[in-house]
Image (cartoon, rainbow, N blue to C red; front, side):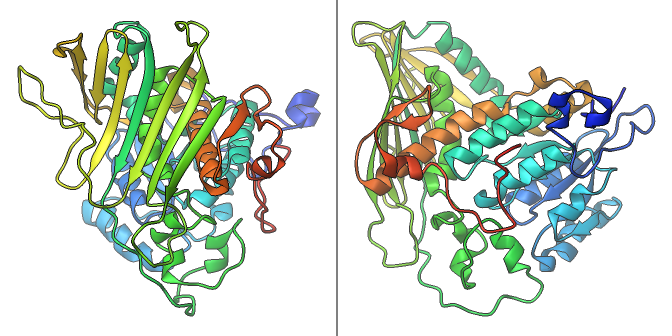
Length: 453
């Protein structure tokens, strides 16, 4: 078995292959009979630690390299996740391009800020690495298009970070809805109610020692360093993040779109604002987005509707704390957060959180079918690599792009302050140059997402 079927150079192959050279070269053949997969983790602060732990827990998978622009993180992470557990110390990199030159690395896990996701993933793909990339897979709509092209051109596995797609709960939800058991599903809702304190205002300051801030900025415009443009708080700045709809919310957007059985909308309208706090946050802390999709198989009004809402402060559970008459169980609620989805069909409705779904049928809302169960998205990535089979991948990057597209279209509508008509075929707004210009962005050299992938 080979680690992957690498695309050869133009001198040994076709013109089509010549258009997709491996920029960093390929890995060696499999070493031994155990098919050990060697992974590099890019970004080791928050979710990066979860990736380290989960990959280290898999059989015949080894985290061999860590990469982060903040050198201050390495010592503690290596002690906690490696040496304290009797594991070999990984290699350390601050520049992901150096990591991609390592031919012994089979795959990378990209856990950077959003504005780096697509470029890091495309560079890895071109280097012949299998890729799993955290959500959202793209910072702009156009980036997602480019990432899909790259994933289709090279013979590597590219997994989107929509980890619920590996859960038996979500898989049985989709099978139930797509099988018509809720009747005609015409409306899906997604909820992201998470308590978020103000980030305050942060003064410009010198870059902390050990941080390569220019590399952290990467494709983004050159800006002075502040704490509100750095660890985690970058989520609330348009240069690096996409607000909470593109943070926690992207999971529920993906579930809503999957359950509804749609891809790209024909109309989008989003309103909201940044309420209460006078701080550095640019993204809204309250956002309500509505999408309209074509539905050729529907009833007299042949369309489907999807709604999504972000709330950051005091809230109820949006009517999602429904109890079943049989068990009294509640779904999608916690003391501070409400994260989940509802689906409405001609026969009843469904509520869903990460690992449970429950239906309520008919006028009496009698508790009906239900499902539950978690999965292992990391194991799915490893399984797809070993089999060299893209069909095993539970979250192909194409699906990640369609879900991220909804986030970007909603944010554009919100920022322009108007409803927008969209053509799913051309992937452009209709007669709206201003909106179309916001489907992409300017890139800072040399950190440019390639046009010809």
